[in-house]
Figure 1: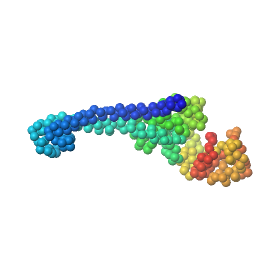
Figure 2 (figure 1 turned 90 degrees about the horizontal axis):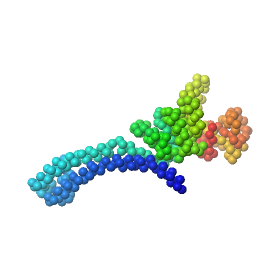
Figure 3 (figure 1 turned 45 degrees about the vertical axis):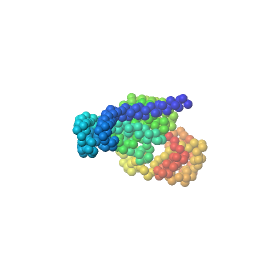
Figure 4 (figure 1 turned 180 degrees about the vertical axis):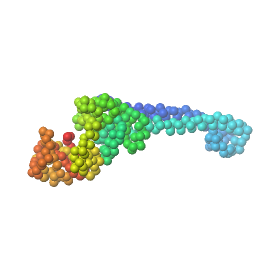
Length: 362
């Protein structure tokens, strides 16, 4: 129980820090509001002492210090005493009024106050997310990943320590982000790391990505939580995977591989482009899905023909328990426990299978 309370305190600490910052910024309103209140109070009480009622005295004070100047509204305010009082009130009150209003407007319009308030509201929105991905580090790659996952309805939370990114992130329509150092535990907690499906380490340097993988695995050690990372060299990729990354990617190798596919197989350009669109989430009509069949799975012992009749799509390959890929499939071949089926079909049909039977990792 004590451990659970400690986790809640850690989770709320970043929000409390932003709330304290909001209170500090709003505290700058105290002096101008006090001065404005004092000017209105002195003016109203002064006019009441000269024979006016509360409403007209307050009105006279407002039009005097506000430099509106509609003139006196009651005969008692045209006496010499009232004119002297009005003159002194105008000399002192106009300066107080304009200074106070300027300070109040500046506080409400300053970017820090707006950004802090926006981030507090962001924490509330992120707290509602489930099965999302956290991206540590923002760049063009993160933006493209956001656009691809958005088409599939998968939420994404950006975590980056650069406060100046606030305007750019909003301009690109990214709804969820935390502008704090992603290696800090409080930032990851605020991004909903405990409820997320996975994290992508997308920082500029290998050393930072290695640290990100290590910190993430301390928070989410379970194998079902996916940790992907970018590396600039095979050695860095090996280190990340040794620390618990599900997979580390070499961007240059990935780009070269895609280009080589078009060079080596020009006659299969359409198929290559289709597989590319599926792999990068750009295809919305059809998809590929891998389902691992264990001994309790309803498809264990069923034939390929029986499985094909049970959903809209086809079994196009089988990955055996020892890792071999079998593409020559007879309709009467029976699926053995431990084998993984590679399915091809409409997105809606495969999504239903994914929810019903579960998905294995390749």
